[in-house]
Length: 373
Ligand code: OSB
Ligand code: MG
Image 1 (cartoon, rainbow, N blue to C red):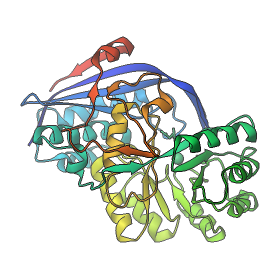
Image 2 (cartoon, rainbow, N blue to C red; image 1 turned 180 degrees about the vertical axis):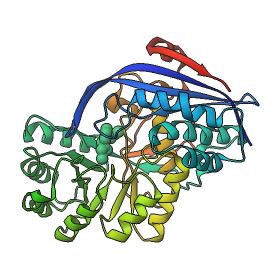
Image 3 (cartoon, rainbow, N blue to C red; image 1 turned 120 degrees about the vertical axis):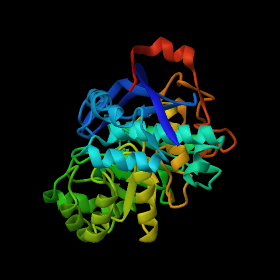
Image 4 (cartoon, rainbow, N blue to C red; image 1 turned 90 degrees about the horizontal axis):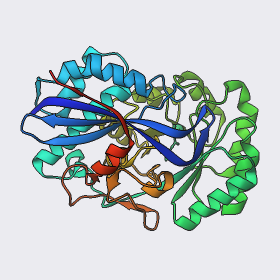
């Protein structure tokens, strides 16, 4: 039984090693909202809210999430008992429209809490079987095709199993062609447009069919399914949806409409693990592969994604880069590492599988509030 007595909200400020640019905006300094959940029996867990500082990827931001958690989500869960995270998820769904990343921060925290209490790994609680998960890298938009090629070659030397290129009008076909030539025909290559195109760009998008891409991620609007279906009918490259899939119902609509053939599951985008697993299971029943996306997480968010990606139908490499890709110093110990393009699922440690480095966390914390019933 889950019985939360406190939720501590902590904002930290951490700088990425390098600016990360996608079609909808750039990030270097990150403000990250972390939660520490405490249960009546004293068990604690940490979770991460992945919302950015601006609404460039989704309508949510770190500030809307903090507001939603404080005003509407925490009051619904603190001091109430839930048999499991699934019931807590259903309660939040019924009571609050949208605010998926805010709900997810709390809901995912209860999965780690439940795992810690049972003394099992988060991956085991989720039902994941893998010992290691395959990792791809996401490369931001660069100044020139040459600069992108240099990063792609470096990624391959590091062992990444897949390279994803961020694209936008003006930085697409030429960049993709250069990287395909540099990496050769066997490299797993994908592209992500983060909503930068319109259906009218069909002729341009069709040119991407020449580069044997594993997938083209979210070319059209963040809430679109109908135009993506039209586009998929005109392309041979499989479309993969990210922003458009905010829950199991949207995944079902995507399948019914033919809006794409692959789903990028980010548990935070869809409101948490309960809904992420429902999408995973639905896709599996339809023979549709899924993979786990990233949101420039710290090592806490990474722990959740790695556990989720240990499920069977996460059959393409995820955006699960090790700590050193983004951070000079991560906030967890041990830091996340990659060997031969694989990240090890911490199956032999209970809960998240990593410890939070509290000394460093205090150094980067800018505010903290504790919510109680
Ligand atoms: O679309 O997958 C995306 C980062 C911020 C916002 C959106 C996206 C991304 C990434 C980062 O691609 C992937 C990662 O965390 O390694
Ligand atoms: Mg994406």
